[in-house]
Length: 299
Image 1: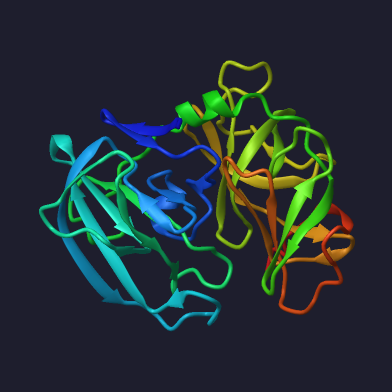
Image 2 (image 1 turned 90 degrees about the horizontal axis):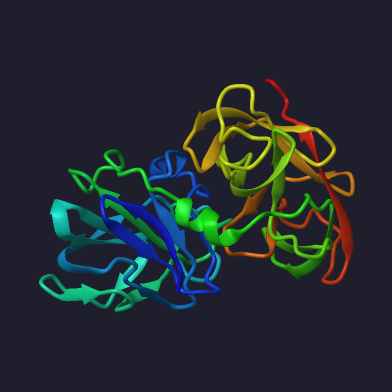
């Protein structure tokens, strides 16, 4: 089980084989690398070393954008006191824990649910966020260091433009890169391959994880463009985090000539999520398609 992120002495673990994301969400903390979404298969597990459950609350969310399986309107929130006065905020988990309960790494916390805030594009997951104060507010998160993730992900391959349809759902299609060794979406930063994490362009932000010591990219900064394999700009850089270049998407995916809503790319996930309009795509499992990008309409 690798350590994937850390902040102020708190380390986050994610079980091997479980996908996660720091940027693939519209929630404000994800734009600043202040939260992790972990896509557990059923039961959410405590990601940090130890803590004590402070409070469990429920909030009424907006009407779901989709009434897909498990998409619920009531939003549970769990607060866990961590060492050093920090608070772990947990969302999208139907709690099996109670206030005063002590948790250690890998302890079960409850069943993951599909939040009404994110349906229909998101699958059930747990949202983890370290809060510095006022834990129920969307602001005030602690920026996470994803350097551990970058270390074990290893060097990304060249971008793959051909994908095999692995699974078809109503609102999206899972794709597998045809190129051996590829995973999810790989873009170029300063001409060097980088793993992409984010929802492009539908969530409005993404990140390209880069090794600041590798030849080519400087670890971000102005002028380090994020491009697709054919040179099409994918986004305008917004910040350098040392381990990643964050960017604002400037392009939309086009698959075999069909303009799509977006792509979702994750960490520790070999597949790429292609988001389509319901009933507007021709693909079946096993089909091979070519993925490109076109500039967003400036209007």
